[in-house]
Length: 289
Image (cartoon, rainbow, N blue to C red):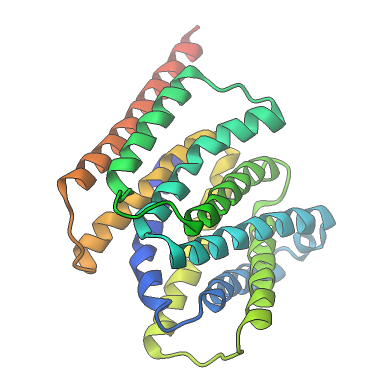
């Protein structure tokens, strides 16, 4: 069930790509990040206020939520800025390749050993990402370097949320994460852009979907599930996001789906399925011993 929820999260995030791409044509990207995280924060914190006020008053939860919120806003904003200077393919590949960063950072800072199976399957997934997303016609540029920030901030968000969720009440942690992400992005918005809160109908619908589904639901699942699922496994499954993004762009945005992309998607899917099958087999063997 938990793996299914992670895959569902990847499906939803994949569906948001073409929505964001269309929305930022008319809506400032910083405002978009602020609005989607504010919607998620308000929903979660109001719910918690009536259900469990005490959970909101824990200073450790507030500090941990602030840390996650900072990395969440950095992830969103750096990716958006990077897309101004590089292609969608480069952005998706570099962000997805951040899956390799997760076990390396966990080994360096938290002494978690990197398993041989993980190394092999991580590189299989990276090969799949290359075929799926990378466009060789775009040369390396400043946008790629900015998107590297996205990959590192996303990796740290996964790692820290995996650690915090084991010792912090989940709903308040997620609520404060959204709140501080909204605050950070709003401060950047009001200090860099002329302030305007007017919205067209299509922008309102897009923000409601991104706020409630793409942010509130998905990030709650991604944090909560790490109580039970290893962070590296979570990172691997999230590499399905560009696979679904490609499929949604083909189905709803009339983008072409070429053989190279199909091959890349199949490689990623095969790598993740193999990882799960081998992991489950090992768990059963250990239980029988």
